[in-house]
Image 1 (cartoon, rainbow, N blue to C red):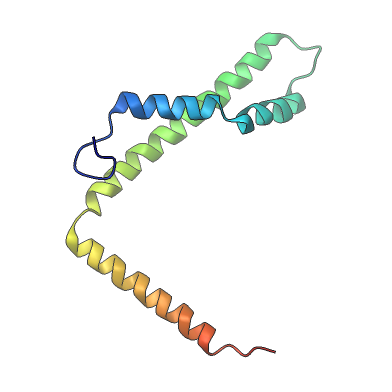
Image 2: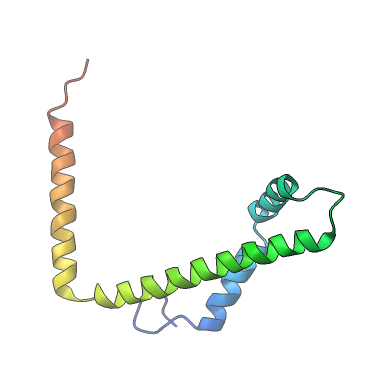
Length: 108
């Protein structure tokens, strides 16, 4: 199995990797602890907290699904030699511009 080659990354493996990365990420827990205390008080029902988690999870699902869809389409359209040549030319011009700007900067 090649990750950057011709063979594709298995969808199950990609899902499990992303799932466990998110579940085991301490920043996610810190976000929920810090942010949800701002919106849910102790006196409220636990259903409100679950509703907030469901809304947040749904928004994340829609966002990342759309990103996957758009980036996979972008990869297909940018995988030809002509686009790579054009892209490398633009990046080269930008780097030459940055380098010339740095070369003519006055220090002092």
